[in-house]
Image 1 (tube, rainbow, N blue to C red):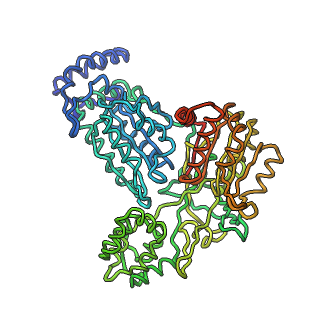
Image 2 (image 1 turned 180 degrees about the vertical axis):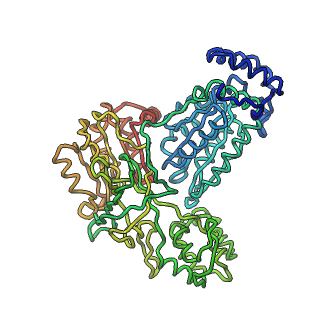
Image 3 (image 1 turned 30 degrees about the horizontal axis):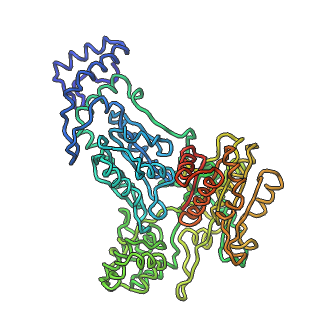
Length: 620
């Protein structure tokens, strides 16, 4: 028997050495079918004794039976940019290595009505926008908060949340799921963890704790499943749901590829209120692969002038040594390469106010509306400029900053069209505060400081929740505002390359026709070539009454509805709080008007469209 050692050294073995020797002599004489029969027979005999296994954490409920546990542990990931999915995969692999029976699902591919049938599951979820769940978890969220939510008194769970403390509603989706599951009667085996953008160490600690709890609290089950996995080969006990496209990219967020900038071209006019640029990046030699809908992660550095300004307000030279990520570096280098300096957060604002003992500022922060307005209008460096510290040491300052994280840009090219390149569409963040010009961290780096031919560190971020139909005969409707049109450029390039027979319809909105029609000539060429069936635009500033893409959807509502009823897919990309919300309201109205549905029926219709992956959103 190749999976069991000949010496008496099996972890948690409940047999003494004499019993083990007898067992080993017997098992070597059995065929595989006999081993499977014996494992089932032993499982049946053990049900009565396993009912008394210890309770979980603080729950007084009796733990579920052995036959239920045999269905396995379920791991659900609800991901917006892939981080939650990656952590779920790592938890899956760790539990598998420990001998547990594991099921892994992206929430978007999971039958949400079966969640009350789970006995033990872990949910790893991100949060986006104003505390909303990721797009693929919207239907699970609605189901759990609906009047039809299930009774989950026999379910055990734990939630891990990935958030961003620059948002006021930090990790709200994870908090909502965690609280609601408890309200429905589920029992928490370990407290919810909320991790910021530097989530990885917390995730590792949480994973180790979960494994430790399972091995201790479910000792009887752990012994059994470990033994059976040795007998039957664990592959027979494991279920996993994965997307069919496998990425073989060796370059990652932790180990990015050094690409080079080929071209940077402004694609708004000189009179536009927005500066938007088209960038082409050389990936030659990387082997990096991507699909339309994926994003490009870009590592950037802070503006040295901004670092110098900040150091001046703190009366530092910049040569003071600080410890950052277990490295001793000069303060100016640490601030330039490792600290988030351009995106103010509630955590930074409150921590800084406490550090400088500014009670007046803290009292103003007690009003949520005032605090939200302050965060959105006051940059980190301006906060330090307005309220300079006294007696602050470099180590204290650096400890306040979040670690610098890469910015993600929707890829605006199809690899079948451009080869070893990736194109992105960058909206330049630039504004004035007093006499100071402030710029975005990543956009300033890519537009103002990176030279053509210069190197930048990049990696691919797959987005399995924003994919073209596999069936090329299916029609698609694309709805975008501003730089949200970027992935649709990739979509149309891919549809052209594939000679897709399905029709393509673009709704695009921006400020002005003359100044802000991004990629106008390309869209016109695709219309001329018959690839784009329809293009309808909405220009909010070209007339007294503002017109948005959601208004255009209603204007062409009957035709849009006919496309949908004929099997078309609809995609929305852009601002989450305004544009995407407005588009969703318009779609609900279409189903009410042309589908003769109630509001509730329309909401359910679009929910089913989500489940069928025919209604997909990439919003931020």
